[in-house]
Amino acid sequence: MEEQPVPGYTIVHKIGEGGQATVYLAERDYDGLRVALKVLERRLRKDPVFLERFVREYKLVTSLENEYVARIYDQGFSGDNPYIAMEFLPSGTLAGRIHEGLTPRAALRLTRQIARALDAIHSRGIVHRDLKPANILFRPDGRPVIVDFGLAKDMGVNSTLTAAGRLVATPRYMSPEQCQGLPVDARSDIYSLGVILWEMLTGHRIYEDANPAELITMHVAAPVPKLPSSLSHYQPTLDRLLAKKPEDRFQSAGELCGDITL
Image (tube, rainbow, N blue to C red; front, side, top):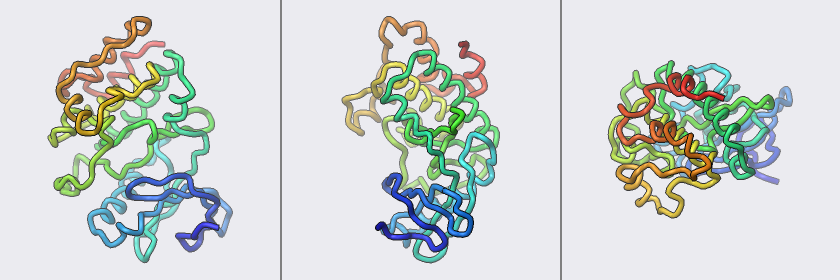
């Protein structure tokens, strides 16, 4: 039996873990509601930077309150087990769907749905900064939901949490400006969505054989990769998504939605 990390919740099983937190499927004791219980890793609980990041994630997500973001039910940041109890989404991740294989039409439809989600998030002045297939889950009706706002940036608030380079996104999906440590805005998430579209269309990760250091260099300087000839009619959209300069990309997720026709 696994350790019960938070009083008031009964663990069903571990869903996953990352560098900063472990996520459990749990039942809330007083009503049996199933939740995804995100608990900060023990080694980080005394670190003020990581604790502040965890607190900020809760505040950002609760401020969004829309269908494209997992609902937050409960939180606690004192004691030995800082946690966030959020909506449990059992329909899998985009990473899983890519592994199973997607048709080009399905890839474009998902791109447009994710762009709608980003447009809603960006309209509240928030940039996700760690968009990747593992952070896109689904409701039972197929609508995508963006999760893990631990690296998100509220553009209206000054923060030094990432200034020392302690908290970085996943290199595979980082924009050129992220790779260079430059300021980012909504167009950084649009670049990350372009990387995801490449993966959905081809079934392969972009710059697949590169290590993290090489990925950073390639995002900054390598040409936009070319799709196979059978997918070449999607290349213009991909070129704009993956443009090295933010001003050459789609300027908003809403603009991207308008560009995709099915």
